[in-house]
Image: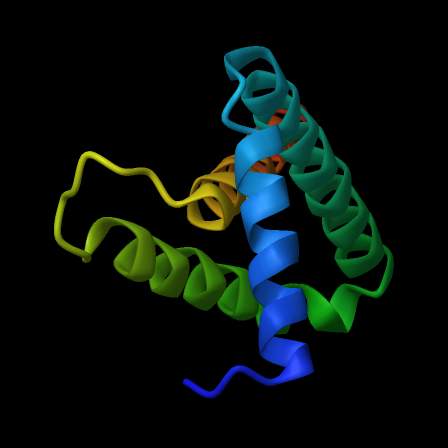
Length: 110
């Protein structure tokens, strides 16, 4: 790639974030935060889809496709020892959404 200002800015930001979140406690905080944000988003989606009853099937299909495509992206790549920060964070976000929908199903089933 060419050394443009935008490319240099991107590399600098990426290197600073990677260095910042290489600390295990900060990485744990980022993963925990992404699970909580995913849980919140999943609860909001379930609440909105439940309120508008004609959106339930459409939202269910969209969430199913989102979960399956993201799992294919995350688990379909070759295993390396180096973890990719944004991919790991996205996986925890997806787990938060799935967990929130599981909790909603338990609430509705009881």
